[in-house]
Structures are given as C-alpha cells and as structure tokens.
Length: 326
Image (tube, rainbow, N blue to C red):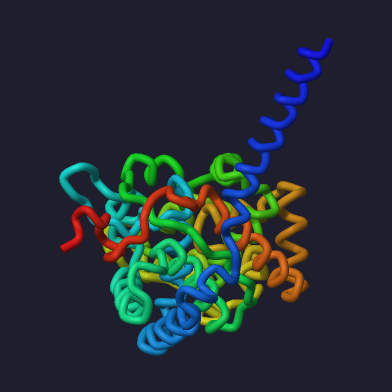
C-alpha cells in the first residue's frame, strides 16, 4: 500500500510538472518581455511602421498579412522571412506567397534599427507580431497588448506553406479545417478574415469568383471583369474592400451582406451557413464588437506554437539563420 501511495504521489508530481512545463512555454510570452532588455523596442517598430505606411498605404495590409502567413506555417517563428539556402526551399515562393507577400524590406529596416539599439535581443517573429498590430492601429483599427518573447526558427518549408495557408479558392469547409488545424475556431475564422478590410488582391486570385460564381452581385462582378479579363492581366490589383480600402473598419462584412466579397473565400463566410452568417451580420452592424473580437483573435493567433526559452534563436538578419549570417 505504501509503495502504491508513493507511486501515485510520484505520478501526480510528474503530471503537475508536465502541465507546468506546457503552461510555462506559453506564459513566457508577455507584453513586458523587452521592458528591461530593449525598452525602446516597441517605439522603434511603431515609428518604422508609420514611416512605411506613410510612404505606401498598402504596406499596412502587407505587414499584417506577413504575420498571418507566418503563424499558419509551423507557428509564429518568422520562418516566412527566411530566404532559400542549400538546406531548404523557403516559404516565399509557396503558392499563397509567391509574387504576393511583401514588406520584407520594411522588416529589414526595423531589424537594423533594433540591432543598433539592442543587438541580438528582439526576434524577427516578435517584429512581425508588433508590426501587424501597429499597422492595424495606424489605419484606424483596434489596439491590443502584443505578447512577446517568441524566438526565430532556423529553417522554413515551402511544402508546409503550401499545405497550411488557406487559399482564396477555399470553400467554407476547407477554411474551417484550415483554421481548426491551428486551433482556431469558426469565430476566429470570421473575425480574422476581417483583416481583408484593408489591402489588395491580384486578378489571378479573384478571377474565378467574378466569372464562375453565382454568389456575387452581378454589377460588382461586371466592374471587376473590366480590369480582370478572363485571361491575362494576372497581376492587376483590386481592393479587398471596395468601399474603404485604406481604413480598418467593418465595411468588409457589409460588403459580404451585399454579395460584394472580392474573393471566393470571403463570400463563403456569408453564403447560407447559420454560424458564420450570424457573425458576419453582427460585425457588419457593430464595429466595436468586431474590433474587440479582432484584438482577441490576433492575440490567440500570435500564440500559435511560438518558440520560447532556448528553442530557435534570435536572428541577426531576418532573412538568414545565424549560421549563415555574414
């Protein structure tokens, strides 16, 4: 009996320790992570993001998108920033990223300023998370306390990017599955899709929707067909939110109610499914609720499998693992 009691106690201790380790990995992310090691980190990122958006308004959406596409591939570890090398093909040429994701030069500039202020301290993964928040705020959206302390991966995977980043052609079922794979809910899907209230999309990504789908306003489709023919002009751009494309607001959802979502995947959120339709209606009528839920969802997304503690590294150059840095 005594030995059984000791075994039970040992099992309980190990169980508690295992829970503590799991919780500890997540709890290492903190809004105050750089308070003592790089106190100017947040202001440096904010200043550089503001300058980049002032130079090109579209850059706000681009920086937000970098954070999304990074976190959906093996976690928020800045793998999307890595260039190809002799050991792997990176994520920049994956289907969802090739000739599409941008903002790498802005991240380089931010990293250079941070390296001057506090060398080897602020990770590229945290830069992406902060820059995403600052971009949303600059364009009129909500703010949130970004949890920090992520470390950077030393490798990337184009195959993983092709497998995990949701595509514009996805139907609702595929979108739900894609978000579920990241432990994000249907509500998170609808809320985070609101990021499409800013930014642009290429003709090649919305062509099928404006020519083949029936769940689109005919006059809206006609107007888009004038700039995006059935063949050619693949790189012609259109606003994801045709009404207020440079303002972070809830017009994205209002557009969906009127069957004026630019992408097939956008309009799928309001297409007869009671759970997603009700959320679209809620956000379309209440901008404050959308802002509150978006901030919460961004914090949740930013916590997808971060590298913490001694995992990964703090890259000196966001494009290269330190072993390749010269």
